[in-house]
Length: 374
Image (cartoon, helix red, strand yellow):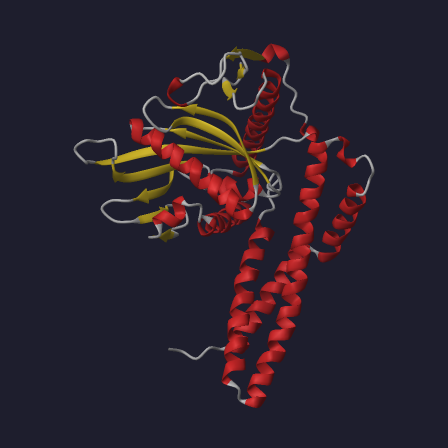
């Protein structure tokens, strides 16, 4: 086993810290924190609870970034001193402690580096995620529900607040679709790399003959709209239908027409909401999701025009972005980044940060290649 090169490891950590500090721009970060602290101290802040939560959440996120950056700088200074003491005293325990600390700093800086790559137009936003079952019958509906649980568990691991906005249950098992919101800074930037088709291969629990089944589910991730986005939707462009909410297996959960379905006629985009208590709340939630989808559509059209001007640039994600195989072996593999793990149960329990981080790095590389090609 090769001897640990402390000087090299420390040099790499210091270089990464310098890059992160430059990308985050400490002065700009502190100025933004000062602005948000001033806004958070206003007496009438909580008159608008939604806005207040956005302000306090953003402030907490930026303060956390700054603390981590300052802590990394102090730890880099301390670990260098620790290593020098170990060398002078020929103390193997101190040297081992210094090695473990510089390795820990390296891991923390790698996590912080991800933050610098979330520089897309909407990356800072909360996310709205929709999961739909695809080919595969009842297995696909069950698979969609497994994915819903996976993402909710991921959010729970990070302490992110979630709200399930709509669930359409399948007749036998699982769900046809579900929409939920993740209220956290940069939730869209992180989860947007999860968008695409997810494939599951397993022995079907719904097949009496125990045959292997392949099923699919689609994941759509959009940023939550803000009042400043100015997505105007004329009443003449939408059709609003109301109906009774329903639970698993079609069992009625109430007898009032509180569920809402909004169809955007020009694009044929359909949004349904039924998990709020009133028709007014469901309509407001549905309109917010519709605005988000139209915002993404507008952004995609603008990007498409830019690509047409620049020529044909190959940067497609493809339909199938990740495979989850439970038989004849255990493996989850991302087909874009190549990242894989055999810890399938951990993944289903929400341990997907490594996949998300690999996806963010992959996306950043794709964007750089596009810019170079232009």
